[in-house]
Image: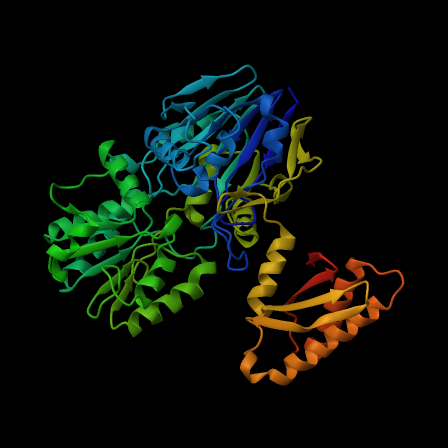
Amino acid sequence: MDNIKIILLGGVRENGKNMYAVEVGDEIFILDAGLKYPDNELLGIDVVVPDLTYIKENIDRIVGIFLTHGHADAIGALPYIVSDYDIPVFGSKLTIALAKITTQGDKKSRGFKEFHEIDENTAIDFENASVSFFKTTHSIPDSLGIVVKTPEGQIVYTGDFKFDQAAIPMYQTDFGRIADIGKEKVLALLSDSANADSLYENSNERDIAEYILDTFKYHTGRIVVASVASNIQRMQQIIDASAALKRKVAIAGKDAEKIVRTAMKLGYLKVPDDVLISERSLKDFDPEQIVLIETGRMGEPIKLLQRMANAKRGPFKILEGDLVFIATTPTYAMETIVAKTRDMIYRANAEVKTVSDGYHPSGHANKTDLQLMINLLRPENIIPIQGEYRLLDNHGNLANETGISYKNIFMTQKGDVLEYHNGQFHFGKAIEAGDTMIDGIGVGDIGSIVLRDRQMLAEDGVFIAVVTIDRKKKKIVARPKVNARGFIYMRDNRELLNDSIDVITKAIENNLENKEFDWANLKQDVREDLNKYLYEQTRRHPMILPIVMEVNQNRHRTRK
């Protein structure tokens, strides 16, 4: 069978938003359905999910969505898919439990029931291929890699992984199973690249647990921990250290508490009795008895720390004498924000430490891990995924060092399609695979034009011009009024505002004298003339909104 394709729907040249499709004949297997958090320039956007055009156009061919683990970069896009389509979703026990929390948090996907629990021993046979799994190590239990076995060979997707020889049983990699997969033909390996440029060996989690305990032990005040709720391993280490020191733990946020309670119920998180307390109970304990874990909205703990540092009052204000422990490892893109956050915390007279101050924690494979995975699986082709281009490129170079030719290493971007013909993969015709931006309840209704307007408003503000005209008498009824927000301080710029009124008046009078009067031309002339004048005076381009009202006998109309 030559009819095999691998489609990159997300997760390449970006952090997060993992979503890949494998076509075998007339069947399509979706691997992960993740989101990513927006960059700073995506003003007002809550999250970004993959473009779902491919899903919609091929819905009848999709046999299932197969999940590797329970983090948002693997399950976060599910609500926007299953709200419209009953596609079976497969994942491990914890992954499915967290996926249910994700879908139940959205009104449209709340009624979705097509969840199916699998484990590392599961194999599912379909008409053209079979799907099986293997156990991997990540920062959350029940992480799995996925194998799609076709008549031509296997396509292996690692998901997020690392190797930790000191991992406890719940997190251990099944090296034997991976080696067995490698004994058969592996056509292609889609492998995690998020840590491919690391110069350090990953610290083992036992050492990190001891570091957290020592850090907590020598602090006498309240401890505020910034963590990601779905990093179950880190949450366990924090709870263990707190319990050992007789501290109580409060978790800020209902979503975070729901994740923790779910992990506890399923036995993936061990919490001694009477350690967890509610937010309302914080006032009943002295600061030296408390560990407050905050995870932030949508899992963004760093940004919430800034609000806590600036808060005027309340239990979530950072207080003098607090220790703020940042238990998450920020990406390169977040380093500036983390530095700014640390400064804000110090201004609040608190102390800051991070888990990465003395260790190199990561849930992702470093150079050695990546090459070991390649050597165990012995793939014919490598497709680096999960990371910015520099990370994919580093991963490609690492693969070449193991003996894989560069012609068998595919540097892809979103929308690329790899087709298998005559024993080789090659690039086929690309598909539409951009970003779908989620803003409030809006899904995909925010595009480049809206973002450009938001950027303009953020940078140069808005300038509003209001004028009333009598088109029949060809005159301006009332002197134009102007207002500005985020552009200039109006009290100190009266001359500029008066002159801008003259510019508006002249533009409108010229249009009123025109025999072929047109509302669109009038508004455009006001915008262009005002834009030119304001830029000459300020070197800024505010958004200009002309509001023109028409008075004609007993009729009163407004034109915007």
